[in-house]
Length: 95
Image (cartoon, rainbow, N blue to C red; front, side, top):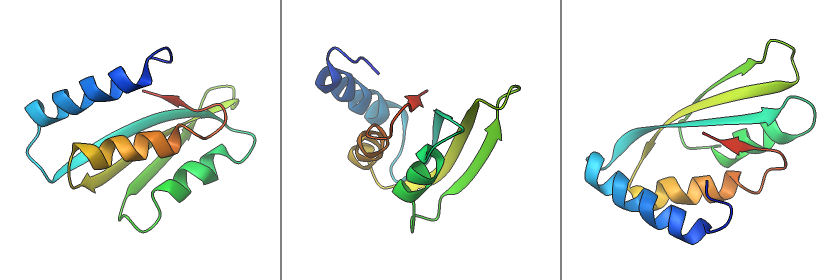
């Protein structure tokens, strides 16, 4: 994400999602978070009660964990809202 102008980033993302997907759609989120700490649980919490399939994999040295989340989303605004929610997690990188 463009840290300098997140509003512009989300506007561009919304346009791309509208142009490339038929809604509702299955969407794949990918994040990297430090393995230590509450980050993994916090991200999983964002997707509680959504029917999401969450797969985690530790890095080779175990310092970081990648999180892949597949979930049906209603529209681009719902996708962006989840990105914003996860963006509050300390140390998270959205891919």
